[in-house]
Image 1 (cartoon, rainbow, N blue to C red):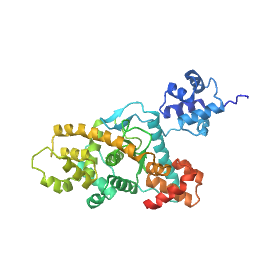
Image 2 (image 1 turned 135 degrees about the vertical axis):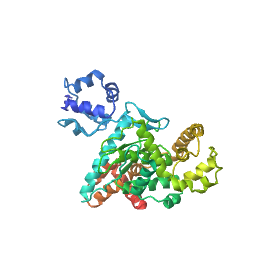
Image 3 (image 1 turned 135 degrees about the horizontal axis):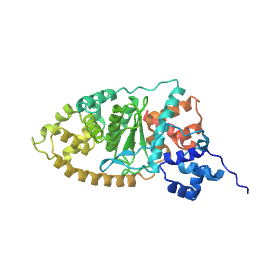
Image 4 (image 1 turned 30 degrees about the horizontal axis):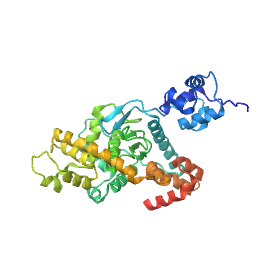
Length: 386
């Protein structure tokens, strides 16, 4: 059978590989070709066959048509800095899976804007801004007002999943797309943000505990408040510390925390907080036990030494919980994963455009990455959530 050559733009082959976070060696291995051959294709010295180009499209998670563009798109850059479970943030060359999650977040933001336009609607504008070094309590109050969150409501969110769902809804109602990354390990990244307006994006790792995801979404939201556009710079340790402090103050407002029964009844001057006390604060305000303890540290109600001692225990518990969740949850149905990943705002935009016959069932499948046969179940879930 005669070999049919493809004619991709060489620079697009390089762009697709680099934006997927892959070296030549890794990409060549996944595409089942020699590294030297891939380098030839990227330099225009030879051409892949059509089946070989299709294989590259699968490896890079790009549509085949992308390789025929005149020049690479300018909007996407691979990020190198991410919040990590153990040390706060980490700098490194991102894995292909993480690079894909970042690219998917960019895509979903652009698609959401297009879907809003298809409904003749404009995105809600998120106007909350902050400057590094501002008073933490002032910034936290500003963000709470932007989210229209009330202490009374926080106390009603009895379960961790209920609290996460409600914080996510409030964030999206304020004009921010809140997504969940599904394909990366928690040890690699807990979250990231895209500070482009309108419709900035915050992303949490679905493998994290619900209360951990809440903190991540709020932390990333503070990055959005600090940025004019683009991707938040986690290379700045001062900015990271500021975002952590504001997120803690959002979850545990100073006056409400100090006036809570747990704090009022705690032995005055004692830096030691029991697990029961931290659990009660976690339940009442919606943050994790660690977030509660960090907040108590910020308010000088405990010591750095006690926090460091407890943090080791928190890390051990987090890892045990992660394993237990994976064992208990098993395999989630595709429509549940799609809704959890894309979130209510993006999913509703897709379904509403479909119901108005602005897009096809095939389009829904592409936007939400599910098969058409799962569409009925997804629509049922949307109605249930509403």
